[in-house]
Length: 179
Image (cartoon, rainbow, N blue to C red; front, side, top):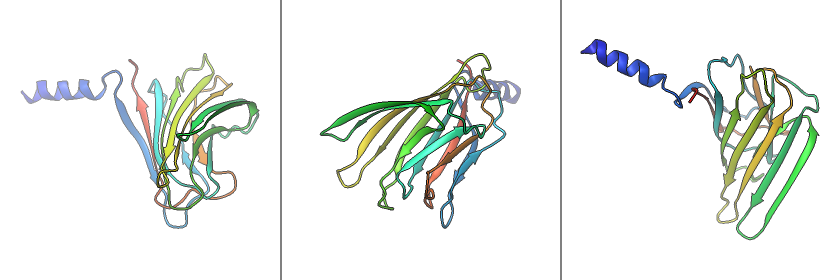
């Protein structure tokens, strides 16, 4: 029985569509200028980052494989219950990851999908759902982005432009098996 049970558990753990934890980061005292995931294996179809984050400069961005060239594009749709805005930007040197309040006390919730990250035959696509509540005055943003490179993504850097990611911010990287 344990042989059959072991085989079933092993096949379940690697089933298509499963999320497998790759790495987690919890920011310590004093904050950090960058959260990095490195040596990402190419054994998954997609990646997902789930985060609760706060930065005093409000915006948090990301880059892949330390690429600082203008090979990114980003877009957003924002709403706060009374207004909605949208915009897009080409020839960027980063992709948006999150917006947080600059109050120092409100953390945003974020789910970021990086599609086909290891496929060397296509550019990479990103989508992020980001939201926060500040005693009823929060907002929600749907970000999308592209990295116009066919390289497999092996590292991800997440950072605010001119401040630090606050203590207690938490980032979890997951790999998603092929469906």
